[in-house]
Length: 520
Image 1 (cartoon, helix red, strand yellow):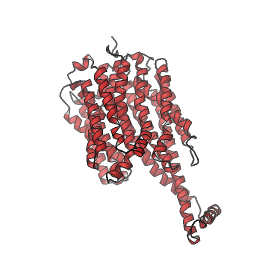
Image 2: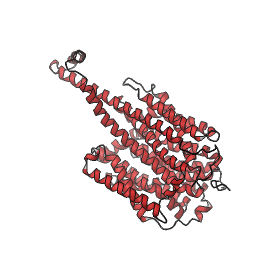
Image 3: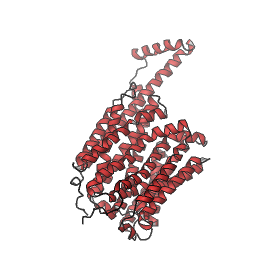
Image 4: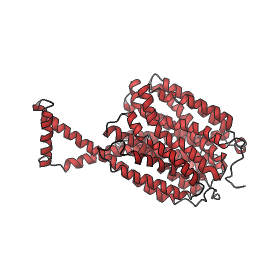
């Protein structure tokens, strides 16, 4: 019997797929919705915008800590029982997030919610992969990808609608009916395989768990607050980097030497899985960066509201949905490396197209490229998952899924932080360049100043028209510098996509529809 052959099950695997996809969709959707609601949360709970960002950070830290530990908990308590517990914790804590009367109670509820949501993705992914035979895993992952790829796309639109029409609290309340339905379906259709029932995971790795909490917590706080506190210009951040790096190195050594480590890093000896981990981190950078930057472009440069900006990027979801049947058909017939190459190249060229935007673009101008990015994502997420797990045994998938999803989330955090930093720093650079190359005594500037002054003299006191004209021109200069900062980010994302194509060909060839022989 092949090492990766799925265990026989009595339930239709598509019912299992829908059950676990609900849980994943709920968790990913909530992250995107909460990001849109932050300004409203800050105003309602009497917090600053900086303090409100901890609503995201507290969740991500708890989420990151639980991700790699999910395999041990599923072996110790049973995967189905642990998944049901996580869904319950996530759903109940969602109610308390929505009902929180103060920021600190909100943060406490978000930590609990993050702990419950951290295991949903790896558990759902491992259940799905084991429920289908290797020849059908590509189709199964195409369905699962709807929860991972589409949820961040519709999140801003749905969050903007709920917040504008009702209250930011409904951004959390919406999880309750979805969580109840997921709980009922998982209880009915999901069952533990024999190796889970007979597992003896050993004692809990307290040291490994503590080290994991320290370095992931430090990393997330550094990425979240680095730009605001001038990165290494802040003393506390330098100490955070020191403790984070020390805890990370200690964690690696501990996991390699311990008899029962929290995370089995030796899984990375599998070449395809190791390459997949690198690639999924790069994928996280590109996916979350573009998802974050595009709405900002519409809001900050074109004056869109949060809801209309969300609606402008919403068509990406249609592209992803359109790509799923295509990738489900090709996944069992075409070498995954060709599919990944196509996906990253299309995504990269589309990012280059975004790098040619101007302040005169309308929503329809970017409609087609936005749909294309969603289509390209389908050709990345599904093949990268199937080929990364294709050479692993079933009893290795749970541990591998925790590592895989953690690296994707870390890549996303790095991507968001990198994009935010580049937008701020490159705007300053371009503003200085424009100012240094613009002669105040030049005829072009003088003529433009007189034109604006003449126009404003009819709108305000003529004595103040010159000062108002200079302010208006400076505002246009800053806006143009901001535009070029967005252009730089789009082009850097394209470079990362093209670099990912090179990494793709580090995979060992896997025959479509069949797993490769396990390589250790």
